[in-house]
Image (cartoon, rainbow, N blue to C red):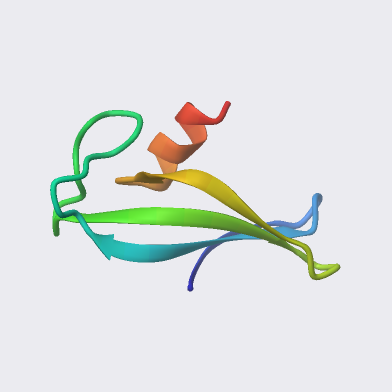
Length: 68
């Protein structure tokens, strides 16, 4: 898992896993990242709770747009 960002007020962090895009595309825009990778994101709270965010995306902005 790679650290992406932290929300200090919600006391959560966003992390991502990297996958090679083998015939898959971003769930939101239909593209892949520049290096032909897709990412799965998850949110970890300071209390230890882990929430997986469904879908594979080319960027964190596509993930946020899809789930807002």
